Amino acid sequence: VEELVATLLPTAASALAVERLGARVRQTVRRLAPEAEVTAFASGGVLRCSAFGVAVPDVDIVVSCPTEVLASRLSGKRMDGRQVQKTALRALADRLNATGDFKFRRSAFAADEPKVTMLAVDGASAVPIDLAVNCSTPLRNAALITQCGRLDAHARALILLVRRWARDRGICHAAKGHLPPYCWTLLAVYFLQAGMEEGDAVLPPLRGLEAICREAPDGSAARAATPSRKTRSVGTLFRDFVAFYGGFDAKREAVSVRSGRRAAPSLRLPLHVVLREDGVASGVAPSIEDPFEPSRN
Image 1 (cartoon, rainbow, N blue to C red):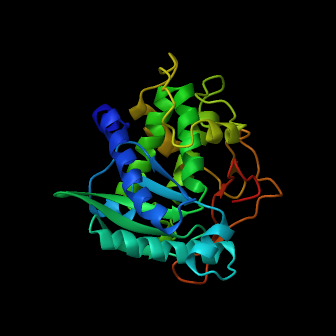
Image 2: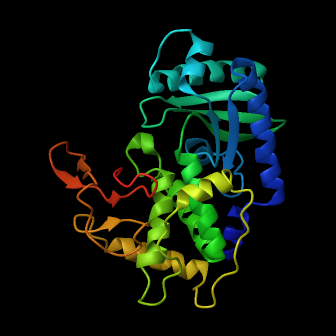
Image 3: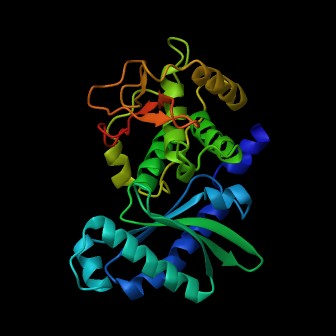
């Protein structure tokens, strides 16, 4: 486990590679909308092209630009935020594909936050990326991992291990109805708060994460803390993570990293009722509160 975790942690080389990817996208974006900002995020070390790597890339590139500015650059017509996201993504994907440095793989326009998956080609290798416009989830995910890494190095390692495990098992592809990687991050954080024995919590309740977003939006300024003396090994933490959620009652308990304690779902948090494979029976999906938007499940 320790050897695997070592390959997941970001390095100076992977950070530089992601920065260069962002710069390549930025060149194309600026021709379309000079006012736009481009930020690249990496969830751990950059994974080279593989089946699961393309399905759920480690690298997110987010283009941020006021909706009205993008609308005027794209068509000159009035469009709502979602229309602008989709139109901008189509235009950017076409332009990136035309450079020969990027290859289109698929789009996910029906998702809550539309995105396009592409391969950034570099010689004989390729890095899968998710491209999004005015999207908040990558920033929120980076803020969580940044803050947890500051508090305890094993916390960051467990988050990355859980995300990698979920991806390799093929259970974090949102388009197929799975929990997306951001939710797996929240599950790992909540376990480190509420899934330990009394007095042994690795992480405290997490509040004020918006300030972390403003301070280091890509996580580059974060310094990893050393593991707490009472923290178990990453392998042991992962084993206990699986056991904790194996007995988790999704009907009676919500995942809230803001409170960091076991409690029933807030009345403000909508329930997700899902149909079984037979299309008749139904069940309640886990209630996972977004700490940046507490009314969002």
